[in-house]
Amino acid sequence: MVRLADLKSGQRFLDVGTGTGGIALEALRRDSNIKVTAVDFTLKMIQVARQGKDGDKISWLQADGQNLPFKEVSFDVVTSGYLIRNVSDPVQAFREQTRVTAPGGKVICLDTAPPPDNFLKPFILLYLKIMIPFLGRLVAGDKNAYDYLQESTRAFKSPEELQKIMTDAGLEKVSHKRLMFGTQVVLKGSRPRDKQA
Ligand SMILES: C[S@@+](CC[C@H](N)C(=O)[O-])C[C@H]1O[C@@H](n2cnc3c(N)ncnc32)[C@H](O)[C@@H]1O
Image (cartoon, rainbow, N blue to C red; front, side, top):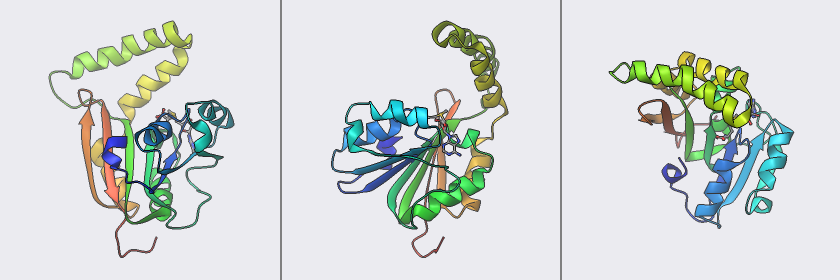
């Protein structure tokens, strides 16, 4: 996802719903000359994220991704990883990401996708239903959280639906690529050059 962002030195990068900061820290690792800002509305997540390598070089903020505390045109690239499945109004979340992005800038989203209709589907469904809760219990000691994860993955929007949501929010040239046997999707769009958000 960070590779897709194709960041250039000096660019302003925002990660929304940053969690423990994996995407923001990776962006900075790839180019230490970019200006990285990351927001999440859960304070505890940000406290952990701050402790990552070079975490002190990132501006961490507690904020709602559906009402970002930035002026219009504040960033060149805006990303979100596994945020959209959690927000109450995905169009509003992308509208905000579009508003704070510079004309011609990129908005990139990574999320889960329901498995595509092919011969792998029954195996993927079995993996989601049995293996994910099992691993959740084994590694994190929390089966319920991982039950939620697999249920919401199966019920989540298709990449085509997400693509339409991003377009409805004002982005253009929106495209997507499925990853990991089609169970993950990365979507990319840009803010039109001549559009006011
Ligand atoms: C599944 S985690 C993903 C974290 C990280 N992006 C990653 O890929 O590892 C989703 C994160 O989104 C945050 N979140 C959910 N709704 C949000 C909102 N409306 N505004 C900001 N953050 C939100 C949660 O606190 C959580 O840290």
